[in-house]
Amino acid sequence: MSEQGTTLDGNALGALLGDIFVSEPTTVERICATCGARHPAGAHRAYSGAGVVLRCPTCGDVAVRVAELPGRRVAEFKGTWILR
Image 1 (cartoon, rainbow, N blue to C red):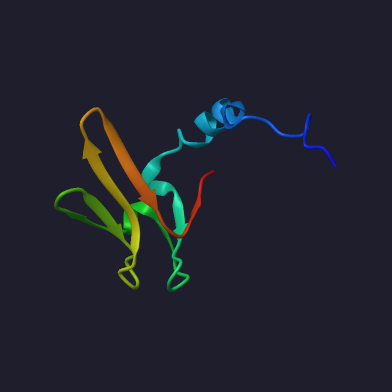
Image 2 (image 1 turned 135 degrees about the vertical axis):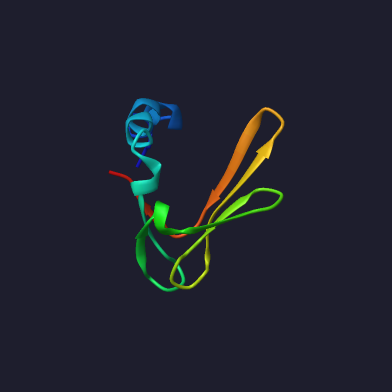
């Protein structure tokens, strides 16, 4: 079976992802990969150092790490994030 004609470059989702990621970030819900608790991002605990880390308010597992580098930001998300 050929994938030609059924696959697209990831750039094809640019507009769709742009629509999704404009939601209010503190209300985005996350399901923790460790304990299964479901909380909005705004309920997570933030810790700053070399970057910022959000941790699950139930178990303390890392939810997201954000680092500021010259000219860009880098983020690593863990668990399931629900964007509406």
